[in-house]
Length: 121
Image (tube, rainbow, N blue to C red; front, side):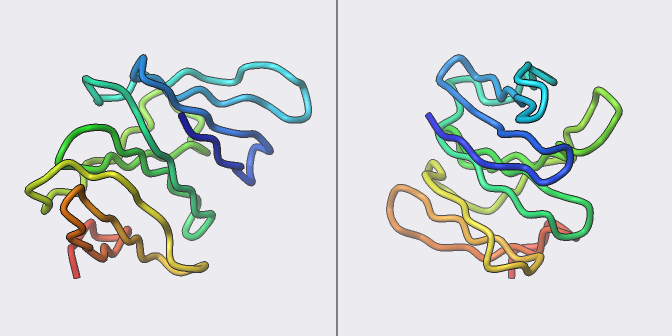
């Protein structure tokens, strides 16, 4: 349902309702990795920031957002969840090239997160 570009390795990440995130190499034209996320009902949106080594955030139909390290060379690249919304999160976007992420839920509650500490500001 969404696609974002990742700097290193040069690839794109896609997500879908089958609850997976797939990284495709733009140089080789092949699949790099499949992330079997923790979104039970699918992944609806992705956000990426190259800040501090790179963060990929996914939102599905849950009250949390998941944070990944797509540039990690280890298979377990799940970093944790952003918890604080009471309604399903529908969107997440990084604020410029800062370590801050804005999320909004289905009743328009906006939360700002420090991606380094997972703290809601």
